Image (cartoon, rainbow, N blue to C red; front, side, top):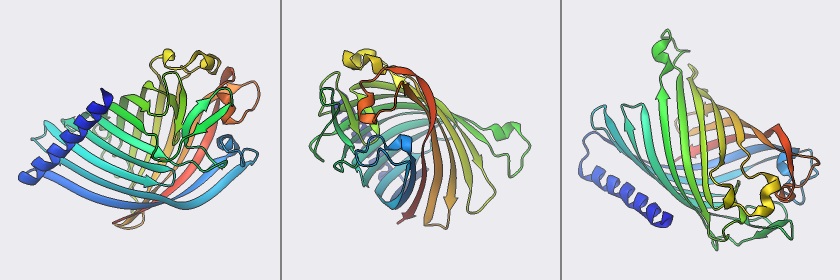
Length: 318
């Protein structure tokens, strides 16, 4: 059912693009290609999935990240409603994916939509596992080969924008916007049976529904090379504990993960741009320290706040 729904989203998005071509009035279309580079600082906590790096105090790396192609379109029907559609293709170091999104914006304040996506990932031996199904007997992942298994997803999302600048003195420093966000996401990994835990990219879950809500504070800045700063706050969890096998009960699949991510946008010129961000999250805590591929079978005793990563992404637009 969800696969058919993903195809419906794709067809609707393509239909909107076709309509755009026939009628150019009040429409906007944009085709963009970007090649990205990434620099990542990983503290010790984020290295426990690596068989060869799990004892390192930190890890710092920089490399090309990948290629993104996006096609976006929207049509304005006055100020009341704006249909939007997008098609995205990503080819990164850890895999590839395709996303299709169809949404409607009302009064430029409320946006509701649905997104379909399909992705697959690449494993790097003992260095990092990015795709596979967890094997409780081995206490490790059974890795799947690239393009042999896929993660399918359908995401229902809504965003309400509050222009705080309407209630503040008009200055270059007070163009603030607060965005309240909520989403419901269905995930299905083709290599897993019901109850199995899997990993694809950075996503660790079982087949089923996940929810998330939060807010993003957007602060436009009067600087040419640092035009915007943001802070996002989010809470996420699962809909049904029964999606997970009972062997994972001590792990507490219903644990609510919280993340806080400050970000600053960097603009070097018209073609070069980027973002610097730090990810701080509330994670499960255990009696002892374990490698992350063993944590799925441990008993959660509490929670702890950790710096997950500091990331700098620089991209070139073509």
